[in-house]
Image (cartoon, rainbow, N blue to C red):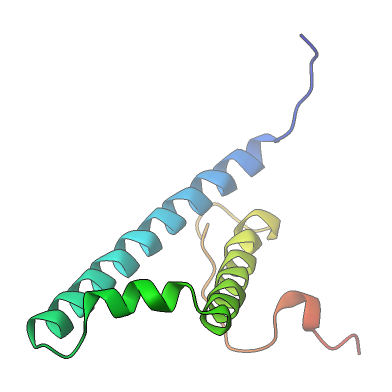
Amino acid sequence: MSDLKFLDENAIDKLAGLVLELASQLHEERARRVALETILTTAGALDPAAIEALVNDPAFRDRSRADADASIRRLMRILEEDGGPQGPLRAEAPGPEPSQKDPA
């Protein structure tokens, strides 16, 4: 077996932070979605089949993919940022994504 090393010690801590942040976001999103679907279907304002139909809509899929890509970019910053162990997760500041910063 080769001695390939993919992550250094700092990256392992950042990866753990990424996984925990992602799990937290997934749990909150899932709980909110289930609550919303339950409220709307119970009130008769939403047909459960309408949700299934929307999943197959190309415009909806494109928007969902763009939202997922933006979320993944934010999460990947955890692995890419340098900083002290006191603040493993940086506050999200409004503004352009790192790749869109003004070079001046």
